[in-house]
Image (cartoon, rainbow, N blue to C red; front, side, top):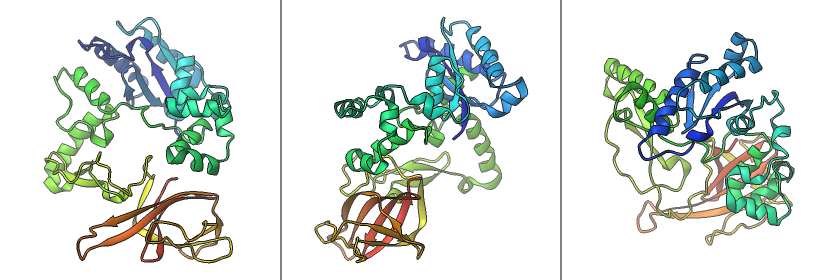
Length: 362
């Protein structure tokens, strides 16, 4: 995980109708950039920067925190309170900024452990965990991941890894489009760059990247640069398409439609361009199959990928059957299943009796 310094301005977290809060925050971002040019706007009132390089230059992390804090509090309109903190991963760094502390490298799990599960930002999950007697991030992180997957699904696993300091990102922590808006205000233009949301719209580096890509496109031709757009689909690889930079996106299915058989969030870290052959066996060594009704023939107990060693299956979710184009000759019936093994979590696809690793969660 990246080690990050986060600046948090509590009085600027909520946008007002006239935009004064966001305009004040642009001054904070400009002041912080005096110590590092790679400042990322996370959301209104919160920005981050990689700490290792600047800390070496300015005499250590604590010294850098002091310099950034003085610079941010000296900005007119920034508010009476500015919090600055350092930790491993964005989630912990935002909390460290709220507390005004520098969490030692490797100390993120211990820092997070006593905090209430409510800081994960998921009220339903926090309420359910509290009813189960799990009230702190440390309690949550101590649960076996296979049990978390079986009870709370992939989203619960993502929160579980953040709670234990094994992952630094959490859905909803960043606000899409905020970075380009801050960049536009700093440049005095009324709107962000023409294609807001580039690379998710999460960073004020988007505007600079847009100008660079315009130049690449001018030199190499219109088809040399493309960006990814979400679309409807069931498989992870079907839910994005490449669109020429600056061109109009062609509608290709509503991403918000039900799409029966679609895998629940979060999305996998890596979608394999060429699925990897896999074998799934039950406790007795027999091959596991999925019936036409979408039912497993037996509980999966072992997994082998591309002829490699067998690994014990610690937990699984699914299967999610899919019946595509049932009315045509291109009819395709398949099913997908999430499997947790010792070396990570995978998304498996079974089609015509053969198993494949379609994507990896990390």
